[in-house]
Image (cartoon, rainbow, N blue to C red; front, top):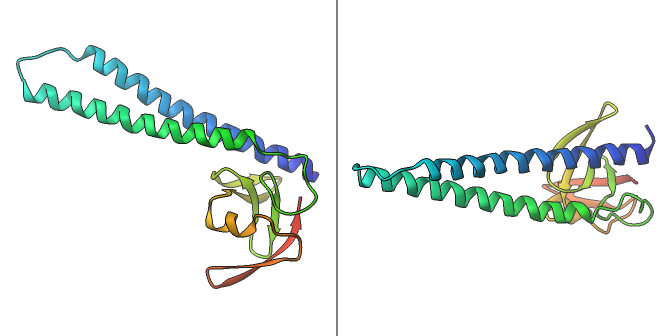
Length: 152
């Protein structure tokens, strides 16, 4: 595969990850809404109120997860694959002496064409170190020196 094809596959994997996460959280929200509607006043009193409170808490937590996903989607929309020259930026693939990274959103390991790339966010510790660096630069991370061999 060519470098642009690898980047396209990495971007596609990130998009699928976001879609799956959104679908899971939306399903949780839908289930909570159904449960709250079906909840009827019972004579149990405290037991009923505890159940409703737990459903509200679950809805609140799912809402926070959804907000986090929406932030990642905004970052995802800013990824530029066409900028291959110059320093590390959002959308770069950075090959180092230790691993290959896709500077994007935090997804983790993605296999493309038999190679493993780590999709990381710009706010991650290694992402912060790599941003703005160029081929040949070195960074120190957890007592190791990591050399940037290729950026595309």
